[in-house]
Amino acid sequence: MLSPTELYALTPLLKGVLWVEVIVYLGIGVYEILDDFWVKPQPWMRLGPTPNSYLMIKDKVGHKMHGGLCFLLGFIALNGLIEGAVTRFELELCFVSLALLMMTIWMTRIPGRLGVTVILTKPEFWLQILMFGYFLPLIQPWVVGLCLGLNIWGILVNVLHTRRQVLSPFAYETLRRDAVEAGLGERELRAFDKFAGHKD
Image (cartoon, rainbow, N blue to C red; front, side, top):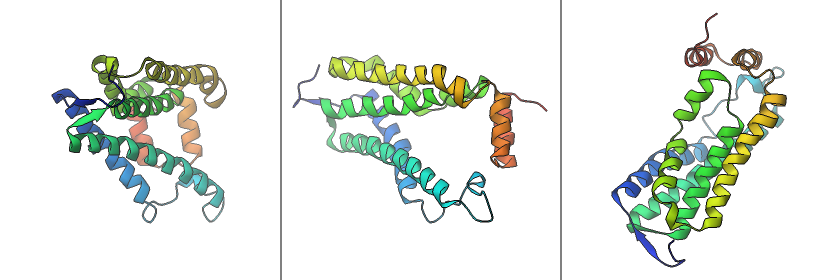
């Protein structure tokens, strides 16, 4: 384990991880923080002739929170690349940020092949595996426990809440029906169907 003030010089693998975090997460963070003037209201935000302000603000809060977390993760990575080294705290922030993102993905895992595809295409899934596989000994044990706990909590919420109350019965057809009812565009629906292997 690193000491609180010790610097860990970047290895080629850690440098690669940090570059992915800068490109993906800092990019997402900057975009989602600054996208206010060109993002249009989603179809499901229209309950009448005009978009519902409450739904728009609720959606914006979640959107900006996601952007803020992504920005923070990317900023930590960029700082490490500029310095050529990271502290234990910076590594721990990377671990915890990835665990928070994965917790949300586990909680909202959707049924069938589409759900597996979503997980396997998320960079945080693979980055978390790399971080656990190669850099775990550098951080404090309680932070390891916290990261594992966040992942387990996400899985528990999916099994005990999402599948029983949010998406019940837990099947792609349920999600598809609700997406159509919420006004999901035809193009997005076709993409969903393709990845899910759904045929009319």
